[in-house]
Length: 204
View 1 (cartoon, rainbow, N blue to C red):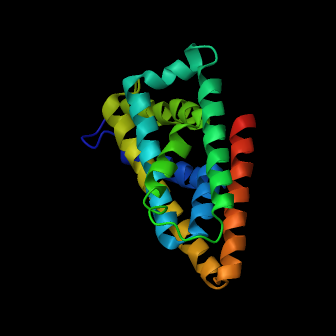
View 2: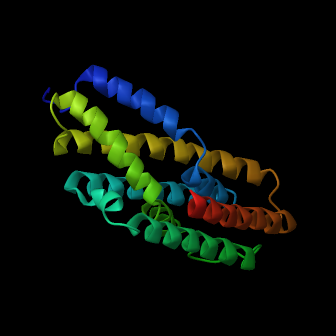
């Protein structure tokens, strides 16, 4: 183990693997896309919230709480249903307010992004399997907390960069169509995406 906690070759491999996984479209990407269609600010805040959720899951792995998803029967399913219901709530709310400018909607993007990620047990189970493997390779015997933190923060940074780009691109695409009428349709598309996401998380 180096002073950096993860040796350079393992760290480079981790970055390559993480970047490959991050760019594969999933619930987080589609959520940020749905918010980016509303505005750049909303999309960036959603990306920030999702990043916070990743740090949350990293913390669960480091302190050992994430193992509850494996050891307690039904724990993952309860969180999964809660996550799906929350996405459906966001989707219905977005559809109902389509075309309206609601002050404060963008400021809620951080909280929404965090909850969308934190309430997805599949992310926790993925981190529980993914991070310790690289941390153990770095330490030689087992995953230590410092290595897990370094890897988790790196994954969060890569995610923030990618999802920030998704938000900017979505806003740019929506900007070309932005008008009162088009705005309503963009909001409806965003709401529909959130409803689909809720179903995805529920059956995931």
